[in-house]
Image 1 (cartoon, rainbow, N blue to C red):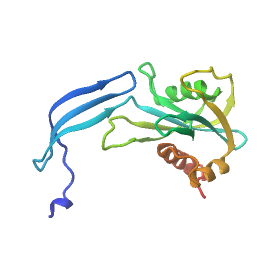
Image 2: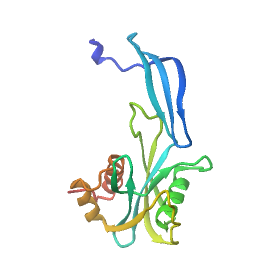
Image 3: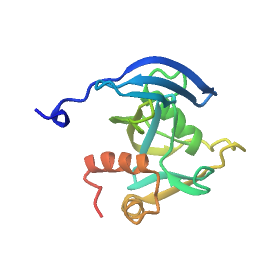
Image 4: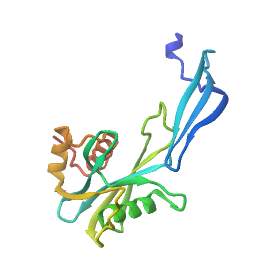
Length: 190
């Protein structure tokens, strides 16, 4: 059997050190040896908390999105409500309910866990939890946060799908989350 046909084997980490530690991110430098004996040093790993992404649908066939400036992109981005899980969150659903209320003011009791994704298995150590929130309704006015100015956007589901196919929703993980959740609802089609 050719080496390319063998099941991939884990690397051995010979040493590991933090390069950057922040409340949102740790960058770790690992010195590694592959199963074939090749040394890779350093290999950088980005450590984040797990994330939640919410596909929030109201009773009127609309999806709740948020638009905010994203400095890495240098532009405003239309996205799903989302955020990092906090140490006190007991589950992805609890984190998603908190993030949905904080960012949009919407809430629901009708949750469905859809999937666990890896943002980038090559360099990220965290997971992204995709949740479907049905029958969301506006409950409170979201708090204004000078660090995260968010505009809530309520669109018909078909229009949001069209925007994704047109490249006007660009966050790749959010498009994947929409495709999974709306696919289960029979709604992900061009």
